[in-house]
Image (cartoon, rainbow, N blue to C red):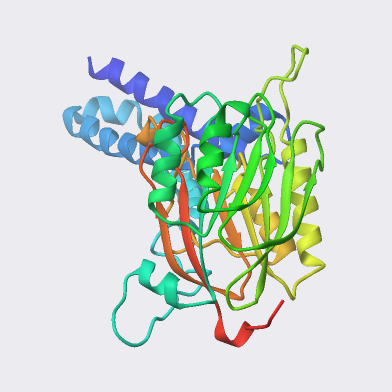
Length: 357
């Protein structure tokens, strides 16, 4: 029995090491890039396997242990290297790392975030939500979002079936950009504040829009918001027996990042379902080029997908912001029928960065 457990242990350890190795390779093949996603799961499994190994060693006699020392040592070193590698990548999205976005320091009498939002003209509350075009609980999803009283709502994957819910939301958020597409490619931006101008751009694929808008805050300052939803690696191609590599996703994020880098004086918010995790080389490169910061860093994973399987979730929905912002709130909302969980972020423009639009 112990021998069977030992073989199973070695197979799982080898699987963890293989996935980790694939995630380090630079190719854009989908079967490589999907290995970027389960770092927390591989890390957790690796730690469990390490604990199981210690238990198995305690159950075996010294003679058996001495006969398997060399093979066991190799697998053990491989497992420890796997754990160390995954910890290195995931560390930045834990409370042990230093935050990238500074916390907003609210002086004076204590106030909750809603009260602050009503009194501070430099404040903006944003909800970014992939609502899932197959979601049949549409009323529930929009009700949840509106209940949190956001100033700006970025919806990913709405199609024509969502029009009644969107029209209801426009009663409180009259400024809107709608690009309703089929098969999970739609996008909507709703705002309580005036949208000064906007543009819908198809950067890489003809059916994948991105929304670019300038929104004026009550302080007369202007923020620039980009909503994006590039295709995930592994997504089947239309009318082809092939799957997408990560190339379309990577190119789209690079294009957006380069444009933002050319306008560093503006207050930027880049949000949406990136179909990429916060620790991947692609997202890190986009941050480096654009100069944007991730509010998750130093605070936690805030995993958003898949909503129905908490232990398998990844952080693929994002809100990246300029250094001109301070963070008041970062929260992940509860399930609403979608396969993603919404992200809520409250931002305040740093007093030193105040400038009218």
